[in-house]
Length: 225
Ligand code: B12
Image 1 (cartoon, rainbow, N blue to C red):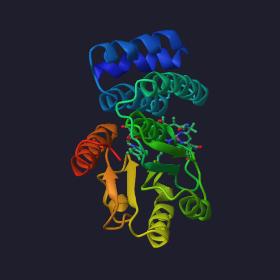
Image 2 (cartoon, rainbow, N blue to C red):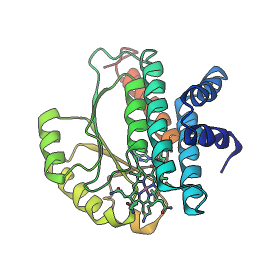
Image 3 (cartoon, rainbow, N blue to C red):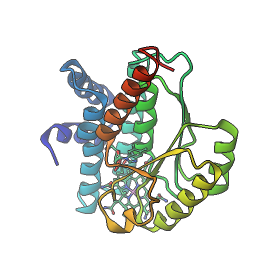
Image 4 (tube, helix red, strand yellow):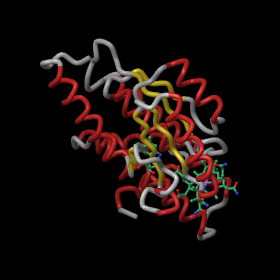
């Protein structure tokens, strides 16, 4: 785990929102982008909290408190970035977000949704534990261009496979991005369909969004769709 996330994990465990925020803000002032901040600060701080829990150094209650504080600081970060949107689309493309059925770990999903919003997309975040029937229903209802899914617990992998297969039938042209801490594992990769885009982290997504922006800009002679 890197040094820069250590401080943040300690602030989160102490419910110190003010120090957490000034720690995050100092990296914003250094010009770091959201991909960097989500991966190197927030994610690694939460992994650190997980490690401390595994080592029995902290309790489940401490872990819950750190998660709640992290959610608060993430929300503040989201507001700061969204008011300063990187791009204003005339007709914003739409993206839909959810965690596979049963999955309660939603911080990675929140970061992804926030990044899309930072790039000016129209974001529909349906949060954790979305039954597959409702994922199908929501795609028909909102007709997004991109669907983003998050998964963190190994025993939800079979649900991921079912979800991907069913969603591709609803709209074969849909871009589906799945983000997971399992991104390199064969058990995860074998659940993804050939068309699935696998996101290892927020930095990958940041670059994907930048490329999307350049490409749509190029197609429309600089006028974003
Ligand atoms: C906080 C936490 C919780 C919180 C979650 C709260 C919340 N709102 O998310 C609570 C307390 C609810 C919880 C519950 C459980 N947890 Co838990 N939890 C964690 C912990 C400590 C941190 C998770 C986290 O927030 N990480 C930070 C996020 C940002 O990281 P991330 O998800 O990997 O996201 C990054 C990338 O993967 C990627 N990404 C992820 N999703 C997406 C999506 C898109 C679209 C994109 C582009 C990118 C992307 O980008 C992100 C940024 O880099 C981890 C420890 C760990 N090492 O992960 C355990 C961990 C994930 N939990 C674990 C377990 C076992 C559980 C429980 C079963 C415990 C229990 N007995 O009840 C339950 C399961 C609940 C459920 N049904 O899902 C295990 C999973 C092991 C496994 N078998 O897979 C872990 C690894 C702990 C451990 N070492 O055992 N947990």
